[in-house]
Image (cartoon, rainbow, N blue to C red):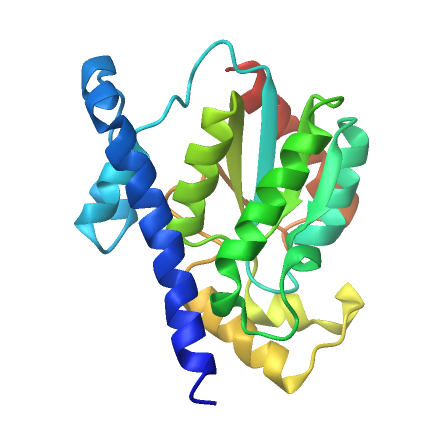
Amino acid sequence: MRDQVPNCICNSGRFWRSEMKHLNRRDAGAKRNRQPRVNQEFCADPSLARLGRIRYHDPAMHKHAIFLSGPIGVGKTSLGRALAARLDGGFIDGDDHSDPAHPWYCSILRTSRAILKNGLTMLQDRPLVVVAYPLGCLTWIFYKRSFGDAGVRPVFVNLGASFDDIVAPARGRRFSGAEEARIVVMIQEGYGNRSFGDLTINTANQSFEATLQLLASEVIQIVRSA
C-alpha cells in the first residue's frame, strides 16, 4: 500500500510537468502569435490558464475529435458509438485504455496518451473521431493542446442527467452501489456541465434516437462553423 501512493502522486505530477514543459518551450512563440488565454474561471488554479495557448480556431483544421464527457451512465458510450457511425467517424471508449489495476487518477497520464495516439491513428482515414470519456480541467487542456498541435480541432460536449434519471430502470442499466456513489460524486463535481464545454445536452429529456439526432445536428453545426 505504501508503494502505491507515491506512484499515483508521481503519475499525476508527470502529467502536470509534461504540460508545463511543453508550454515553456513554446511560450515565446505564443506571445508573438498572441494566442488566446484560457479564462481562469475554468480552473481553480490560475496558473493553469497559461496552458491554454494553442491554435484552436485555425481554418486549416479539417479533422475533428469530438469528446463526450459526463458522469457514469449518462450515455457517453452508447451515444458515442451511434454518433460515430452516423458521421462516418471512429469511436474510442476511454475506459478501454485505462488501467483496471489502478484507480483512474493513478493512470490518467497513460490513458490520455493512449487515447491521443489511437485518435490520431483513426483520423488518418476518417474525418473525425468520437471519444467517450469524462473530462476534468487538466485532461481538457491536454487534449485541447495535443490534438490542436496535430492540426485536429477538438470539440467538447457535456452530457448530463439527474441521478434519478440515470439509475431509472427504464434506461436498462443496473449499477452497483459503488457506481451509484460515484455517479452522485460526478454530478456534484460538474462532469455533466463543464464550463469549457462547447455544447451541453441533457440525455434524459428525450428518447435515445431524439437525443442522438439533436447531438448529431449540433455537432455538425459546430464542425461546419470551423
